[in-house]
Length: 122
Image 1 (tube, rainbow, N blue to C red):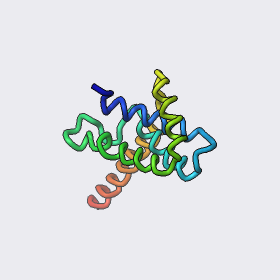
Image 2: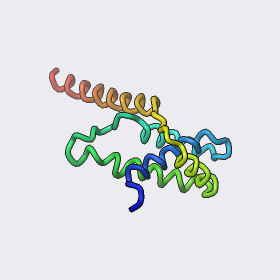
Image 3: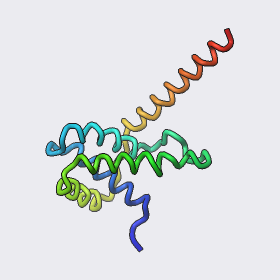
């Protein structure tokens, strides 16, 4: 039996993390890759997994879609090189940028919700 889907996603995200640091990666792929790697390697999710059904949407749709897009923007040989490096690496990175992005989105949603509620009470 092959590796689990979760393990595969971690390896792919780690390969993206390596690729965005490689000067051979096109700038437009780096821009997408930074967001994908930051979110995929973030220890917190935009939608927490404990929320039924929608809590798994980011893991099931957002991350694979971002990985798919990144793969289309990077030469196959370059990505294969970084996949091999990610497979060999046992320590997985964590993303502080991903945490900041998620917390920023939550803060923006809270601010918008507060503004909406505040205008209704006037």
